[in-house]
Image (tube, rainbow, N blue to C red; front, side, top):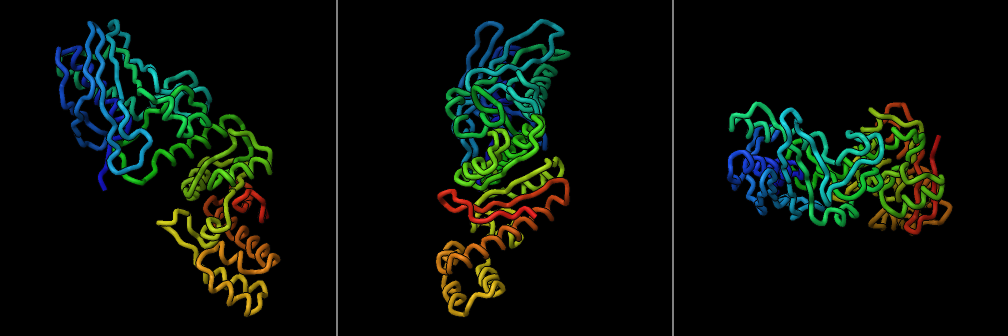
Length: 355
């Protein structure tokens, strides 16, 4: 599948073009930047403006075949010359957020332009300065994204304490289709923010229904909630290195049946429930052959639950919760107390396993 470019790479390209216009009088179009891995992609400009000591350039974000929320957005860099010795500073323009909580790689009050993109912008401008015979870069770079505040409402930025718009992200500059790097990044940063706030109990959920249910169950503040989706492995691996005292995993029966069977990526394209193991679990619980036969005819984990008596369904769900907890504990290798809570599609609690 076709790869794309991160917002950080687009911002670096736009900043380089604007700075080159200030120092050399013309906008390079297309503009070339060096990525951390050594590649030198070229970006066509969608915006070119100069007004005295200030220049603006814009690049349309191309995320390739990835369903990125910022695909097609205009990433604008405004570069203004500063006094000698001032160095390079970063500012958030319209559509780019501001950090308001500790725990992120940036301090509260800083524009949400992450360290990776800042390094790319710094390198791009330094290359232009050297080519024009300047010893260093004295400039203010303002990144903006028209419509970014509306796009940010479709991200987890508000929960992370990033207000007013999007984050400028990317460590490599390259978007790998369906890697969901931005989602995993949000999970990691959510853990960082919760830990920095002293939160002792975090709940990671596979969807909105289970998230709302586990919040009601434990009366948790929003800062303690992680929308992990199918990325339970990414969540657990990060928590292994950055533990919290208590973790609740919340989700549905089918998802956690996968986890109980050892799968750490719960997406339907990358893991499936072994229905025969669930049927064997019913046998182990003492189900009659008639019940086992009915379960064997089911095509999904949910159909198995619907096909068996309520008492057996409750017992099987509890066994799945216990198995999912064991998988999680093995991934964490200590450091956190773990609970697994399984909810139905209406948010009713079906089973809890906490040891």
